[in-house]
Length: 335
Ligand code: SAM
Ligand code: SF4
Image 1 (cartoon, rainbow, N blue to C red):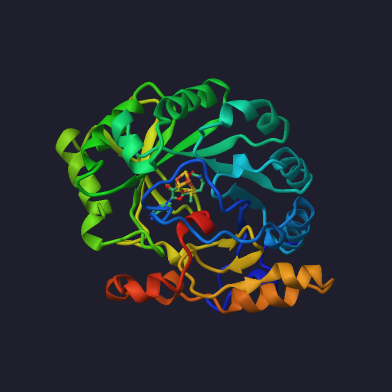
Image 2 (cartoon, helix red, strand yellow):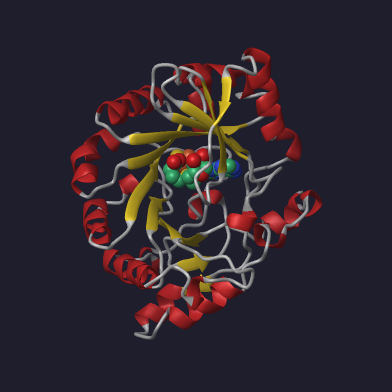
């Protein structure tokens, strides 16, 4: 079926061909911008989707036009049945990819290859071991860095996600870009976004413009090449001429890309979120378990999608703490 069948088309005429599935609410890191200090209330195990349920829900989306599925979490690789999940989803006609913190990804190289996962996003917010420890509350820098090099040498297409926080890591922007001189990865600088419990404050965010000011102060206009962004891409892509890799900026706060949004999100406990910032959710899992069709719920949820950032269409609304706490913590959405 084509991706413009009605149930995945919203009232703003956006077709949704991309489904992000969170497999787990737990993680082996504790990034301060993602996981609240006090942790999160975990869903009881019986409320989490089994691999059969993940497959069944994903299949419905694929039948209605989804062509791309990204697995996320929490940390998707700490879910015990990840090999079966990959195997089942790889049997669907979709491009399958994963977002991971890469702490244990070296154990999954063959499994990922076997199931055709060749695009991997890895989170790394600092190139300094102590700062990595501070932001993730775990001492795993070396493993993550080594695993990024391993993924590249094994032929995976790697994007490195770095959330920028003012006074913490914007002084590493140029170091990250220098890394792309010999390493064919794309470093993606992400504007820090507000979610429940992450103590977000506009002043802590490093904007797209500020990143480019820093880049422009270190490289000449001639050296900086603006690359063409892929359709529905959330990032603005650049490279330094002659470098093997590239860099990009994801500006969800200062320059949202909602007009071309084609994403839907399924949480580990089977709730459909029509937007990263949506306060409301639609329960697919209960309906699936009752043996009923989930299609009417999907259709209603997609149709109700707000035009911009879950209804937070101004920077003023985005700065309203009450509105963040109506959403989940990022660790239980999946990015
Ligand atoms: N554990 C995996 C990882 O870290 O890549 C997957 C889940 S994580 C929630 C997915 C992405 O969300 C990561 O790239 C992370 O940096 C990003 N993220 C988490 N909290 C964020 C925030 N407050 N603002 C911007 N990006 C955030
Ligand atoms: Fe875990 Fe990823 Fe969140 Fe960090 S960003 S706490 S690695 S889920």
